Image (cartoon, rainbow, N blue to C red; front, side):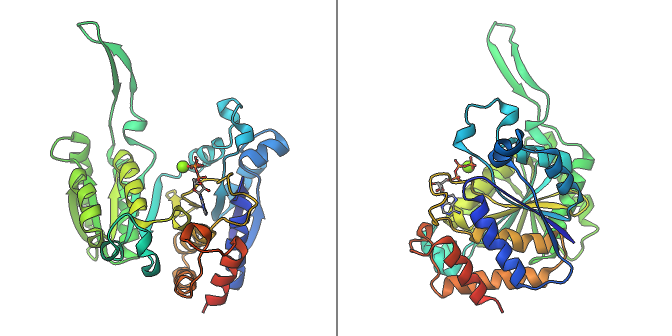
Length: 348
Ligand code: ATP
Ligand code: MG
């Protein structure tokens, strides 16, 4: 099994180092690693944010552990040379269409949430967001109305195949968790959503062990704040998922704790913290590596089929927090390496 390590810019190398230490400590047979340059680091070394050598490693890898890209030195570059093109290029080249974002509140951190601690404490959900279709990719443009006004338009569309593959991703994720899937749409007013709902129901026949429910997106936004503990897995389209996943992340607390995965149809995935390269704290040791450590756990769970090892990492993070491990974003004083040490010490 090949894991590609793409640390990138800013705090990327510091946090990926800690995740790699944790992976090494699991002593899993048969894992190999290759490093690749991405982002501003790649631009500075070879003149392109996603060099062909990196793409070649990515295509061969079973999974990619990605740090972050973004470098203020590159702000003036043309768009296609900017660091962010690395992640966009990888998503496109590898066909990564299913974005998974877990939101979970570790009991010790419930006070950091925007919600009341007792409400936040119950959050343990996963949003599965489609990322290759919807209104972002439909026909769009400007035109002039009959009475001479400028008008903008973006067509929302999904075909059955696009919905079917993300529905499968949602059901499979639910099956690997608590067996509950909530499909979020706006089927009372949108044809796209009516199709979405029909296809999700059709796919549900393959997953009799998963309890399926449906919710309109406006209600889902309310329920995420009112009673987020009711959700296990939420599957939704690109636009609704964009908004709901940011909303869910604020319910959880620090940006330094949130992991993500983006998968294609063959189980290959790219795993990264949801935060950026944090140039303001790069090199200071203040970066919290736990989002990246938790991304490595997702990598084991979703691309390598090693749920037991993923559980070990997640248990160790919970135990490290219970033991008082706190980086500055969590109100403590531990540096990046000490946070890694705390996870290693807590591994069972
Ligand atoms: P991007 O556009 O790449 O998402 P951004 O401008 O949204 O980047 P981030 O790089 O995510 O910003 O940083 C936002 C803030 O959060 C910064 O103040 C940064 O220092 C802080 N931050 C981000 N990641 C971490 C982390 N792992 N640990 C501690 N603080 C972090
Ligand atoms: Mg950002």
